[in-house]
Image (cartoon, rainbow, N blue to C red):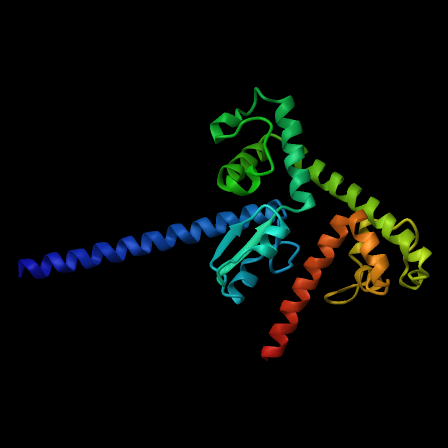
Amino acid sequence: MKKVSILIALCVALLLSACNNEKREYETLLNALDYVRVMEFHNCSGMWRLSYSIMERRGHTQIIFVNSEQDFIEGDFPDNASVVWPSLYTYAMLDGMNIWLGENSEVIDINEYSFTFPLAAEDLTKNWENMRELWQSLAMHTGFHERHAFSEHNRIMSLELEILGETFEAEGIEFTKYGFELPFSYDDLLVRDLPHEFVIFRLYEKLNEDIQLQLAPKIPNVMSEFRSRQRFIEIQEAWVGEL
């Protein structure tokens, strides 16, 4: 009888331990997702902001941080992982955090979060949990870093879109019928004529290949968004094919 009681106690202990581990893993996933969304990381699903519903539908139960899109392309990752990497907005947010922290070092001591000043790009991915806590602390004192990220992201994207618009005009790509005028703005990038069809990107695909190759280095962030939209459309089409 005593042996049976011990066995039952062990089984209960193992079950509780497994439940606790599962709960911790789930909490870690939600924290990572919250951080990814706030910082607007690019992701392998091609979404503007990664969502739990998309992860769930794709069978993703973990988030893996890498430093760049190239790391994602060249990497070998498990099928149950959402892979994410910093976007232009992410880097602009980091820049805004550094500006504010540099001017307000007496308010927040980043050493408490295991960081040194200035925050480095690799901190975004290698120390994401501490970075999330630091971001939350910053949010209690200021919104400067968010305003800076929004402003800087839109400024750089608009500059690249101006280059794209000038190329369309030079190559005879008709864009005025969609209501576009030069110079293009970031808002123009968001114009759609179908749920997942961004007009700017469809016009870009009308450029000949040589022009596309010459243009790509001049508009790296626009091209990054273009590839994200392609990933998202491919996933949507695959789901439709499964119906």
